[in-house]
View 1 (cartoon, rainbow, N blue to C red):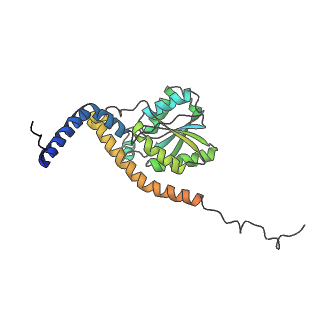
View 2 (cartoon, rainbow, N blue to C red; view 1 turned 180 degrees about the vertical axis):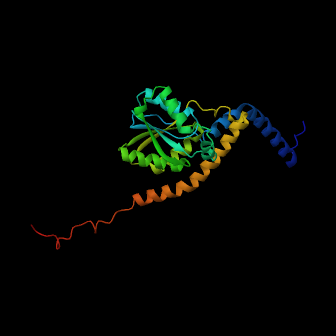
Length: 246
């Protein structure tokens, strides 16, 4: 019997590529949805709620207020805090012309009361907020004035990762916080790539998340480094020679 001739280098390369394709094609067909669902986890985090002083609802989709009402009815917290988003550019012109616009915080109040939160339990930060960083800063100041040390932040699911990052930087460790994703969102992690609108939401949020990370992470590292530095006690020690004797 004759011996089998070894494959030429070019033939080996072609055979390797064919085998690789035979593996990748079924993986791509059956596994792409799992990969894309996993990618959505880059922007989503959902923590467990705990007994708190207040539920703070970040400005945005009205479903966030409904989620806050659900948490309130579960007796997670006795208070609900909302913020005041910057009004649209035409707001003043429309008001002068007698055209009434319903602002976001007004919708929040209607939804909260409509879903069982009494008016006496709703607080509003009246100064305008421009973005997530500004909003959480105002929530921190308000919470400190009230003496609150435990908060629930409610926002849309696609916004949770960024909100959690800002909350860790601005609130902790003085205020313990959990970020809760609204169950009433239109962004669906299990199929976001099938909708042009949801793909746009993902792209915009991922860009914002990267931008916030570049701003916050270096400051968090510096803050952590400063907190671990040993403090000099030389100035804190009383001067025994200058201490008056009573």
